[in-house]
Image 1 (cartoon, rainbow, N blue to C red):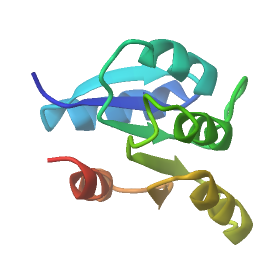
Image 2 (image 1 turned 135 degrees about the vertical axis):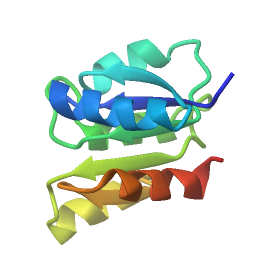
Image 3 (image 1 turned 180 degrees about the horizontal axis):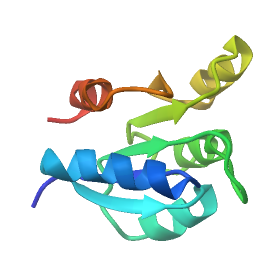
Length: 121
C-alpha cells in the first residue's frame, strides 16, 4: 500500500486538485474540509503527511498544526501548509506552531510534489 496523505481545505476545488495530483503520484489520499474534520478522519489511520490550508471554518490550519504537534500519536507527521496568506507574521506563527513547510497559492503541482518528496518517498 502507498503512503497516505491527508489533504485539508475548505475549498472543494483545491481538495480535488490536490487529491488528483497526489493520486497520480501513487499516494492514498484522505480529504477533510477543516481541522476538526481532519482530526476525525485521522483517528486510527496511518497518515504519512498532512497538506493543509490556513483559513478554514471550525478549526483553522494553525490550530490543527498545534493540535497535531501536541499529540503523541501525530507529533512527527510532516505538515505542509498551502495558503494564499503570505504575511510574514502568519507564516512565522505557522512555523512556530510546527509547520514543516509553506507553499503559497497559486502554485504548480510540481512545487507541491517537490515539497512532499522532501519528507516522504
